[in-house]
Image (cartoon, rainbow, N blue to C red):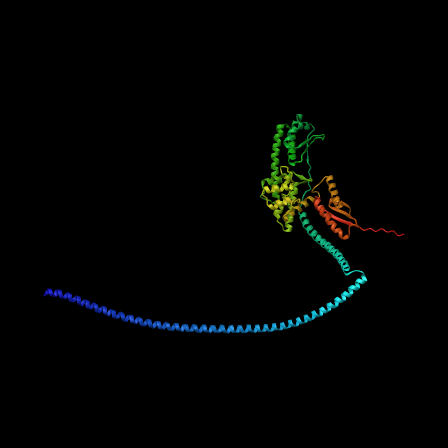
Length: 509
């Protein structure tokens, strides 16, 4: 019994627990279904509420858009009405103008018709008058026309020449005034000294006995000195003086200083001469470099090649027409700098080119080229700017000037060379230059005589009044001026004065 109870009771407990659990699950399922039903109903209610809100918003948006569309339509209708009104006014205006044009066109046609009738009448009158004029004058219409044309041509030519002369005079006066202002402003700011030098140098001796010591036994001392320096030493009857002659100013300076030191030292023999010459040569070379650097420093020019500095320094011992070339080059550089500043050109470029314009004269080796070509080649090797090279090559018009700065260098060079006291020339060269001026002018037909005055600065020309008319004098002067510019070389400018005089001699008997 106990056994049965022990078995039955657990089974009953299990069954009872399963029933309780099933009832609890059933209850939970029922609660969940009720909850889900409530949630579904709430969702349906919320969806319906949102639907109503959306419908209301859509209706409001639709109403707003409809109102906006209606406003835009009203505005467009208003604009269209205004446009139609303007178009109508324009059409009305066009109609009026068209009517006016038609009226004017009719008037013009009527005037043209009247003009044709008048032209026809005038043509008949002209024909009548022409025949009458031909009969009276004895000339045909073509002959009269040619005569009138010739007279008009002569008058026009005379008027044109008069106008041309007036324009040239006005332009010349204006150009001369401006040029004078620039040049005077430039020259007044330049203070230069008048320099001169020759190809010989004189060394003073303490006594005539020193001449024999300079010559040496069998002339070995003087030969050694001449060989080492490349100069000619002239010992003549001049008391207590020895003359050194050489066209190379550097060699002449070396020989002069060497001889002065030998005379002061008193020991004159070949070995001492060679020692002194070598020492003086080194000092002169150093002097050359220092003078080149000094010139560059004074002008504020930098970045110069060492060969260029030496070439500039050699100009310190070089003269041209008695004018020191380095002094001349610095003067030209200052003038070119001031001119460039006055007219708005490149000041630094003009100054550099002007300083180097005669650098070819400082070349250490002779060449068959002129100094402008040599200088241009030296500048090219020194790496100078192409504009500087052109200015050097063109400063004597050997090549065409391609820049304004090159023209400024030409002008500055002419100013420096032409100023009083700058240069000197021999009497033979002076006379020859004046004769060439006169001969060039006298070659032209109609020129009776030419006189060069004012040291060749002015040329007065007497013109034959029977061969040359007043209107042709100006043209003849221009031709002579161009011929002088082409054939002759001269500093500054030459003024041509044409003189034409008519003299009538009659006797009362």
